[in-house]
Amino acid sequence: MGEDEIEKLLKRGEGWLSQHPEKELIVSRYLKKQRSLTREALERLAEDTPAEEEAQEFQRDVEEERVERPLNLNEQRMGTVLSVLRGCGAKKVLDLGCGEGKLLRLLLTDGQFEQILGMDVSWRSIEIASDRLKLNQMGEKQRARLELVQGSLMYRDKRLQGFDAAAVIEVIEHLDQHRLAAFERVLFEFARPRHVVVTTPNVEYNSLFPTLPAGKLRHRDHRFEWTRDEFRRWAERVSAEHGYTLHFQPVGPIDETLGAPTQMAIFSRAGEQA
Image 1 (tube, rainbow, N blue to C red):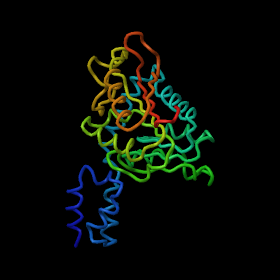
Image 2: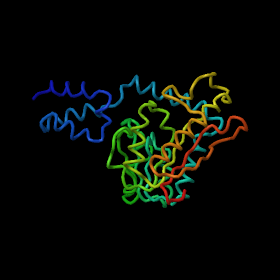
Image 3: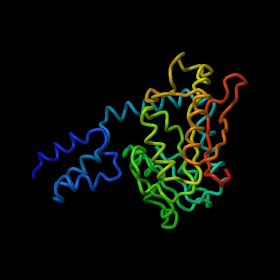
Image 4: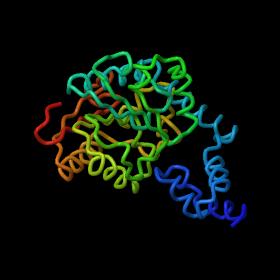
């Protein structure tokens, strides 16, 4: 058992191992629990995104924000989600795909939310969120309310259990559609919070953005953008399969023909009120 086994492990785990919630256990077992090899492998898995790729990701985010900025759409999404979470009485909240921590900042300013967990697949985003939220400068009581973790929505994760509500803001469109079934099970079957708030772009509204070329999606990493009917059908199927009631709410200025730029579905477990 030597360093060549690390190379084999990383090659076999390319594309999934760094995101797996049990990666420490997988790595340790594969490397026969040899601590030095395990530590080296985990360090390599946790390495930052290469600078070129990171720059490309940043540029894509800038492009999407530039499209939506005239409407202050991101602020409206965050404010609406926060209002929904307050209204359903949630005290323990998940922010799945938390990115750089915009919703987390709002949650921390409201004493209603006693336990907050932010999760993102990107280590870099977690680091940026930590810096922007100034975690290392927080008081002990405030810091105890917040946990930031790296993880994937493709794998069952015990850390996501026991929460009142989950926010999934502009996340599902970054997943390949054939992988949505795994996401649905992870969130609605295994984690199973009392309430789930999901937002996603309304592709019908795209023609109203003056800076968005015809036929283009708002973000180059979007795997899809749904019409209102497509989103409704998906949400209705998920709620029926997993025992949730469903409420829809538009976010942003509403066009009589094309609807709102952002579509929101609020799932509540049977017997709960949103």
